[in-house]
Amino acid sequence: MEVLDLSEESIVRHKIEDIKVAEEKAAVADEPEPQASERPGGGKKVSDEKDFVMTAKRSLLMKHLGAAELKFVHTNSRVVEFEGNQLVYEFDQYADFFFMVKTGSFLESGPHPSGVAVPKRTHNAKGSTFGSSELLFTQPRRTTVMTSEEGGVAWAIPKRVFDSKIRLAPPPKKQLVDFLKSVPLFQKLSKD
Image (cartoon, rainbow, N blue to C red; front, side):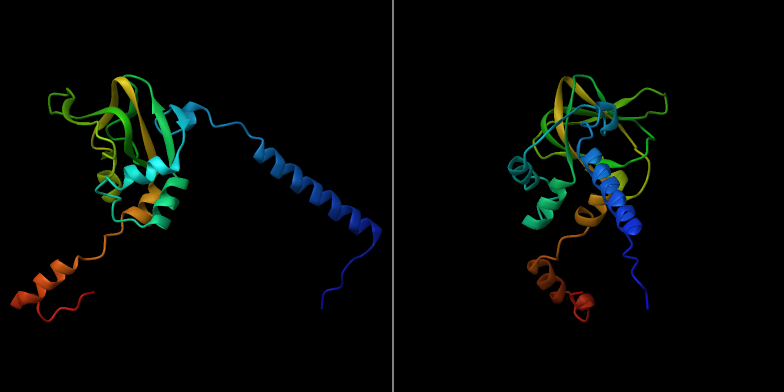
């Protein structure tokens, strides 16, 4: 059985520890907003949950998520404003975020054996995503993405959020399950 030390010295020591903890918490709360270089792709932070949810519902990767999952993804993502012709990420870089377009255009290019970057696609539709395939297959970036001349705004969604909420496959559609039951080869398989 543990005996509590209620001496005046012990009480003062605990109060000092409590004050230090409170000061540390206050210091963390007063920390300045991260600098652009500390954000994915740099850029300035912007915000808004309602717009995120409406945009995510357009995204092929996130339209299957429910309200709670979308709130979690939004809470853990950052809206990043990119200047014109700004690099978002480079070929062969570690993939730690994927991005969902809010506004603007993002130009994706890939390497060519000649060493010249070849344009692949432009992501300019609200809800369009890029950078997710490297997270799906856990590999370095296979492309380079830059903003167009007018710049753009995108949500940067961390890999850990992607892995926990987005990577999950949506539940099978009833029509697909019914179809598979009609195929003799698959009739004995369970829905799981």
